[in-house]
Image (cartoon, rainbow over all chains, first blue to last red; front, side, top):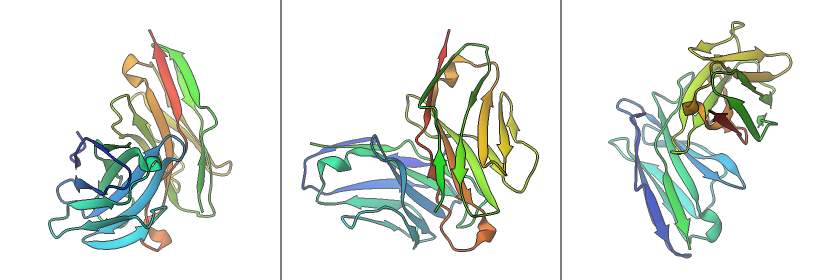
Length: 114
Length: 119
């Protein structure tokens, strides 16, 4: 158990809908990273937050957004969902915005868009 | 931009034997970190081992060790005394060093190698 929690574990929804994925980092970790794992794209970095502020963006679609709250939990919002958004979404946390701290991954949320 | 390449999509090994997974990467950075993550059928991403580029000594964690060749930009993982529980997808990943500046310490992953340990 990495100490990072993600809810829900599975999510099935229809095209055009909006969903919210939730992540709670390890106790004391200030940085949260979101990654998407799909068969065709592999593991890709989406976005990073540090202590409530957005720090970096990767290959994140405009239909996707995220935020980190004062209690440090983070939410990833996916809207106008398409079939291609079906993937495993991971949240990872690390102690602060700088390395060399390892990133510890949550169990992931499996999103299926039908 | 950094790239990570794992040229072996699948490998298999007999229980108790040794296997080596390959990884090459491309970067213009001088200081950075390399990682191996394991993803078993449960899909959980588990950190296996970490190497800091400025350290010449290869990292070791129990049955797992790396062969880090900085000039060749190669970072292979050796698993000794393979166990059935080692069956998983293994990902090589790159992260820039905190002293490189900026604020993005994302992990860049390879496509993975599916390792099957046979009884």
